[in-house]
Image: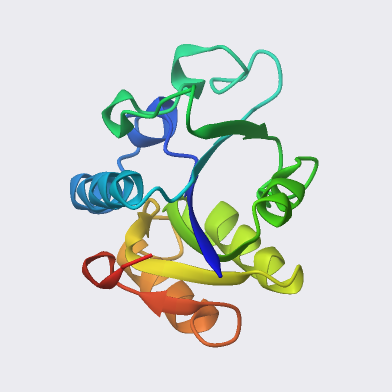
Length: 174
């Protein structure tokens, strides 16, 4: 049984945009820790960026669309791909790549909890992968309806068990 780290939408425009992600620096530090650990253990890293329509702030090639330089991803060794829907499997070859590399355990981290993390986690389970939601390595912004920390707590409680195993970044051992 093999594992992979899936980093979702950790992009300049989402992370450093006008709305700041909840506890963003701590979440980023946890993801950086997981990236280092994955590299040490030769665990493949997949990083996806959300691509907006032409003219949007996160249109392909725009400065805001870029993955965070702080992630120190390597285009040669890491699998970087684009998506246009919340579900990272929709319209991408992610499932085929994971299957080709015999990956079962998929550790999910990134943004935004209630959109792309939620959708990708649910679909990963439906496709037969074993998603592990890293409870302290995903985030979102406050909304008019709910503060971000409640959205995160709710999704950890909802996704944990039914769709994914919850794990904290300190407990990940790929």
